[in-house]
Amino acid sequence: MDFLTATSSGTPIWLWLSLFVLIAGLLTFDLGVLFRKSHVMTMRESIVLWSGYAGIALLFGVFIYLQLGAEKAFLYLTGYVVEQSLSMDNIFVIALIMSYFAIPRELQHRVLFYGILGVVVLRGIMIVAGAALIAQFHWLLYLFAVFLVFTGIKMLMNGDHQYDVAGNPVLKFLRRHFRVTDGLRGDRFIVREPVKTGGQPLLQITPLFVALCVIEVADLIFAVDSIPAIFAITTDPFIVFSSNIFAILGLRALYFVLCAMLYRFAYLKYALSLVLVFIGAKILFIEAFGLESVSPAWSLAVTLAILGAGVAASLTKTAAEPAPEGVECCDPGNALLEAAQAEHNGDADRSLNPATEDGAVAQSRRSR
Image (cartoon, rainbow, N blue to C red; front, side, top):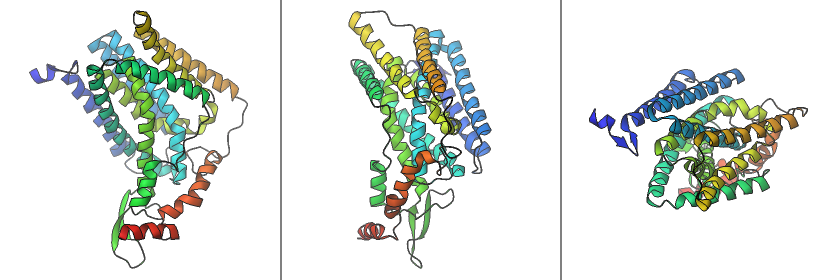
C-alpha cells in the first residue's frame, strides 16, 4: 500500500498503474474482441468506436477532476483537445501512405492498430525525456514556445504543403537493405518464402510492414509539433502522457470517420496553426511581461473557439462543393490519391519487387 500511495513525477503511483491498465484493456478489447478478424470498417462502426474512445477520454477527465482537482482536469482537457486536433492533420498523410502501398481497407485497421502500439511507446519515451529535460533546464519551455509560434506561422504560410511518401528515409532504407515481397500476403507483416521459384525460403517483409514503418516515422515528424504543444500547456508528466495517449487511441477510428470528409475541412490547418501560435505566445507574453498565468479554463475556451471557428468556416465554404471521386479517401482507388498511387505503380514497385531489374540489383547487393 505504501508503494501505491507513493508519488512518481508528482502523481501517486496507483494513478499511473490505473492509466496503464486502462490503456492495456482498451487495446486488448479492440484487437482481441472487436477486430479479431480483419474486415472493412463501416462509417457507423468508426463513429461508434471513436465516440467510445472520446467518451472514455472525457470520463478520465472527470476522474482527474475528482482525484487531482479542477485545474489539472482543465489542463488535461485542453491537452486532449489540442492533441486530438493536431492528430487530424495526420489523417491525410496516413491516407496517402495507405494508397501509396495499395493497402486494402480491410487491412488498414490492422496497420493502424500496431502503429498505435508503436506510437504509445515512442511518445512515452519522448514525454519522459522532455519532462526530465524541462525539470533540469526550465528555459527549454520558452524554446518550445518560440518553436510553436514559428511552426504555427509556417503552417499559415504553407497550408497546402503535401507529405512526400517516396522521400521518407525509412522507406528508402527498407528498400535498400531488406527483401520485400512483390505484393501483400494477407494480413501478415513478415513471411518466409522463396525469392525465386524453386529457391530456398527466406524471411521477407511485406508492403504491409513497410507501410507500418513509414506511418511510424510520419507520426514522429508530427510529434515534433505536438509534444512541445502539450508541454507548453502543462509540464505535469501524468497530464501530458494521458491526454496525448487518449488522443492517439482515438486516431484510428477518427481516420475512418473523417477520411471521406477531409475535403470539407479546408480551413482546419489554419485554425490549428493559430492554436499553436496562441499556446506559444501565451508562455512568451507571460514571461516577458510578468503576467499571471492564464487560467486553464480560459485556455481551453480559447482553443475550442479557434478550432470551432475553423471547422465552421470550412463547412460553410465547402457546403456546395461536390465530393471528390471515389467513395472514401482511404480507398486506394480514390482520385484524391491518384498521384501518389501512380508514383507507387511507376517507381515503388521496381524497388519493392526483387524480380525486376532494379530489385535484382538490390537483391544482388544484399546477397554479396
